[in-house]
Image (cartoon, rainbow, N blue to C red; front, side):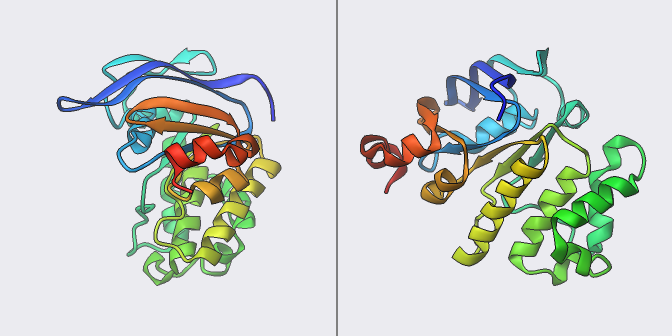
Length: 238
């Protein structure tokens, strides 16, 4: 993991109506690594990801990617700059085949890239086996793999994942976390995931950020947060 800041967030504030969902959040995400954004329901985790990618407007503050200000870019432009966002639930198109869903992920690159398709299918063998099948026939875990694979087709520098374990059985959740670790180890990708499963996320990631009522309440190496009883009891519920 490099110490070079790739994604930088400075005093980022965002509102839902009159409610301040993010309150001057500042954090640095170095290049290449696996990072968790944790906190209770309503802490601002999903709003943070949506604001980073232009799906939710920032009220104030600044977001830079490799030094370039992307704070107010529309979502489709954020993709071309290297940010990919997998929302809660993944959102695959069930009527399309696995391969067709993956091809959609590369649309912002302007052409079909068979090399990237081959790389993604190599990362997710179950998708290779079912590439011609409708996405609606996949299991929950396979659909999550497809959602992640589709995002990777755009060759992002930063992959943002919102609740990748939501609704999955514990065994499948463990597989998804293992896959994310493989992504970190086999590529130069930077992965930021929002998770309710704080213990599982901290056991997998390199570094964690803890939000509380829209503010950054704690951050540190994942192992340190996992062993910090005060932080766990106050903010993570275990």
